[in-house]
Length: 47
Figure 1 (cartoon, helix red, strand yellow):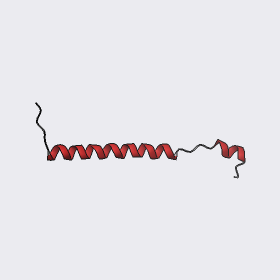
Figure 2: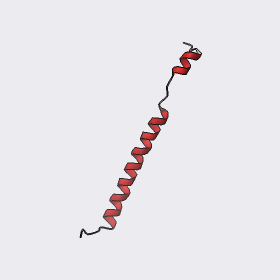
Figure 3: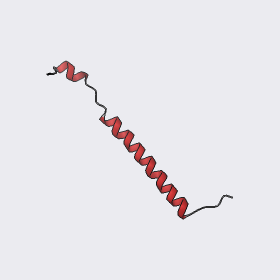
Figure 4: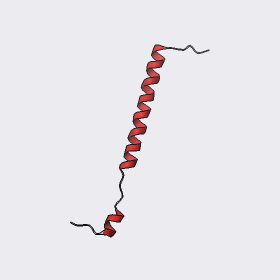
């Protein structure tokens, strides 16, 4: 099947949104792991 110019203009991609979502998830997981390790190595008492 060959697409003409009008059909090509109607195609929408989603690569950017998927990459952004993956980046947010990886950043969240990384922040949690760093916080967990920091809390384990340097426990602070509640006042």
